[in-house]
Length: 323
Image (cartoon, rainbow, N blue to C red; front, side):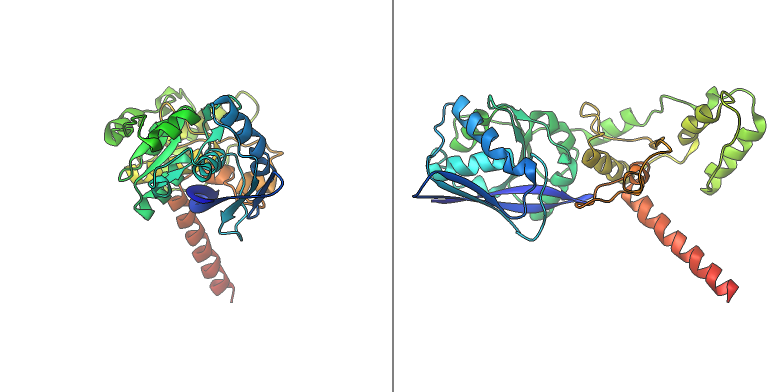
């Protein structure tokens, strides 16, 4: 029998929809995953098998084929554990609901059937909203983070059995509600203030000019002179973030696994201090599957695109003057 479940994967600073197809056929018991999965996805076989057994469901002894479509995109991470398990249960007849393909499902499974948090729940909620689906099923720890995105119902689950009961109608789940405006106002407070700086009037003036004109700044001096202290407090005199900027910044932090799930929103200008030995990929992002680097974590994706456009214009004007 064939079952289809919708899930999502990260690609750069965005998420895209992935269709998880699970087929059960007669033959020697095997478990094959296709569609360019990485090692962590291939290992989901053992996690899914143990989670089903410890949740009271027999693992089907059939020839199992799991396809992650579209097959040309590389997939990574453990967020496919829960959709693969629900697809198996649907194909085996344990789930009778026809509504399963109308939900985007993500989550990592523990061996005892618990659903663990995953990275990137916020961009996944954005992708689910664009598809106009019935809802998003995420781990309970990610529910508030995903609920920041309005327009898509978010359901948090703690165990595999709870997710099965939700689709069979025996478990009632209420959508997670988040007051985004109240959360934004509560989080828009800096823990380190520029007013903490005493003395250093010439440096304070340089910092203020750089903040007002969005200029670059180089601080140089002996250890203990206050360079790091002043740099950490510079964001507190930058213009306040808008809600759209806060969501964009939170999305990048969510992908990088840096988002505080209790706060669920980054409403202040972030400050990053990468080590001097950081690699190029760690600084500007990259990898086989593109991931954000330190530069991206220090600004929202809109600012990054704007800065790249400004840099190209400056380079073009410089070439014209030289010509």
